[in-house]
Length: 529
Picture 1: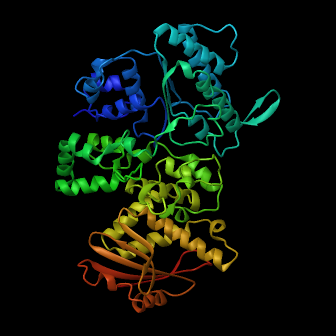
Picture 2: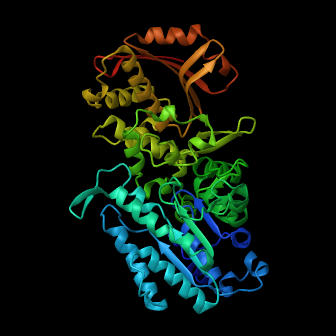
Picture 3: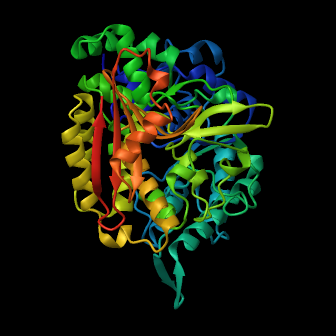
């Protein structure tokens, strides 16, 4: 099987025999039931391939759809003028980049359809082009804009500026105004438009760049189109059954075990209250092609804009995830750096995990192990400001817990804490010190949570600081700040924290840890089997 790694061109995939998961039945619904759409999906989730497929469809490329659902559904195969704008691959941190990019597109189209003798700005020039294309083809125009929001994501939360007419202006403002002026043409050109699709990672506020725009139908949370991008579980087993079997042999797993392993690593995305499981397509294809399950999606780019957003707020990650939210709190993004939650959700680092229909609220959490581990490592590096690699620490710690080498785990934990700069752990009040240590261990334990990790788990007689479950062992941790490990162990025993695991065949360890607010690291460490 040929896997289209990094190939987002529908024509190339079809002509060169790469596997293509057939989404054309949904695409047919899309083009016949409406005409102006917006779709938000995480990066590398197939948005560019969707745009390329639509381009081929509207160009009447019937031969590319042979054997697909579209071949039977579409009878006319008309050819429309298609205008494809792709903001991928550009760095928009320079103030002139966006303007030059749009200017290049408009100038190219003017060479084909003619230039207005009266229009001066980019928007008016594009309106004229669309009208001329309509007249030439006898068909209304199609506009496909891929990653419409990248010019804003590149600069959000930064202090980049550009000089315009002797005045320094934020590039973020300049880019927003440029896009707002350009996108406003869709209202003026409504009579000349057959179909419009904008894709992106985030949904910026309609009052910012979409004012003056015929508001697109937002299908980002539409249950009918939730599988338009990504791979469903049914599609995974239908198209990649042999690939799963080959990977199972490589890992010495049974086929059900391999399916479960892939599910924990790459599944977990939900894009409506229907909660249909959607797998990350980029990671799946890479895993099958390389015969190795790894963190492919997270390694392709560092979400620096998310870290910038976190640095602008006092909210910690543990205060954002694992909670129910009203849709208005995370669906509509208002480009407000003080509220990072919508960006985390729309970027794919959080996803819907449950829906409470009685109060119309959604539970948000990490989608899978790949995202959880990668994002927590990124946040930890940013939070702790240490020189070492937290990813290496996490891997070594996982190995130590997997083999019950608790002395090794103690040394790793002690060394890591000792490496955190004093300025990071210096806190003025007892409450701040407790908050710092709580958040520190929350981050560290979430980094190694490819296993089952519970923090502050509520039980009948109290709240356990931490429980880690691995294939052969269970670890119950109790932490004390400026106390003793013996006190921590006594609390585990007195409160009966181990009682729920009495019938569990795995070996259980009780671990008491005392931390010093003075030194910032482990003062006392005790273990009971």
